[in-house]
Amino acid sequence: MIKKTILFSLLLLFAGGCADKLGPQEVYNKPASYWYSEIIKNVRSGNLDKADDAFTSLSSEHVASPLLKEALMILAQAHSEKEEYLMANFYIDRYTTRFAQSYNIEYLKYLKIKSSFQAFKRANRDQKLLLDTIEACNGYIEKFPHSIYNPMVETMLTRLHLAEYLLNQEIIALYKRTGKMKAAKIYEERVKNSWISKANLKISDRGIFHKIF
Image (cartoon, rainbow, N blue to C red; front, side, top):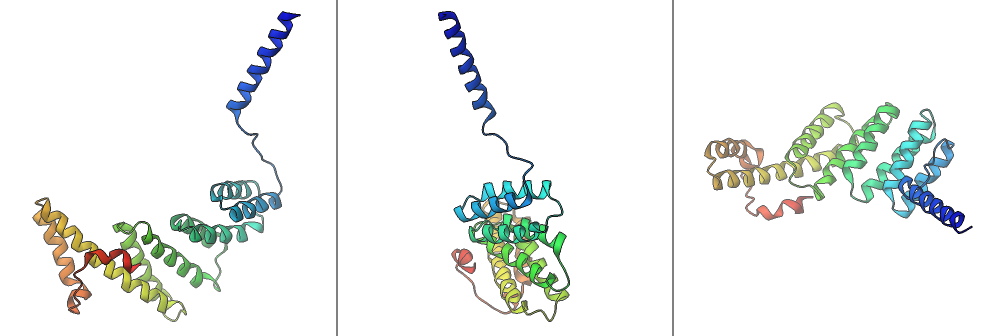
């Protein structure tokens, strides 16, 4: 009897240990409405990681669901509000790829530029993102010359050019401190040829970089 009790206890311990290793039971094969409600619930509670996971399940289990369209915009907005702009861009890109139409493409492209611009609040020294966003602004104005969003895009473009000017000055100072005079010269030429220099604008306080955004 004692042996049976000990054996039973060991089996319970073993089963409990296995359950701990396996973790929570995985949920799958649910209707689209279930995953959509999970997205909404987790967005409302601020748990965007779980909301992202729910979207992954929705998009993989229900590739043609009409709920995908709304879920993408909800997640893009939610990440933007939490200042997770690169994730917001991810969802904007997916929405644009699947659901962009002639009537909303201007807005979607503008939304992507705005999200990239706002990302500098967190990553304001990312030179590639800066240059890519400047290029996106120029491309937008060229492609949609009469867009109602152009005044906002042009304002962002001006601020981006100011940021580029200040960043180039910082790069020049860094190269000079490290004795890389040839590299410093390249950036000095960029600063010299910028419209800010040609307009004789004096921007001496490099600490204002973050204030631009």
